[in-house]
Image (cartoon, rainbow, N blue to C red; front, side):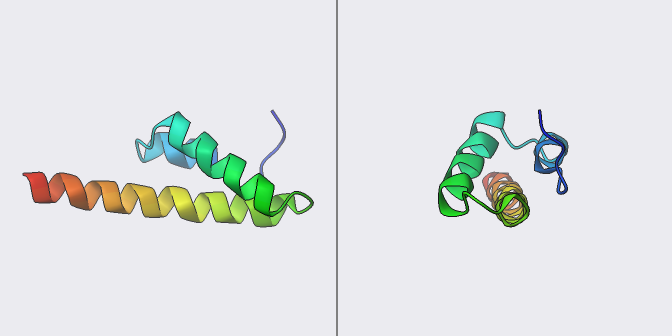
Length: 63
């Protein structure tokens, strides 16, 4: 695996975001920013954080 400036993979693991979701975010961001790894990583990082926040709120509502 390449070195990540913004480690969205570890963040996803820490926030309990399924790896399949992280990979979908990564694929979409790579398609949008094929020549800019840093911009791609920032977008994935933000998407992972947003997903975790929404997921946490949904769990709170269910309880």
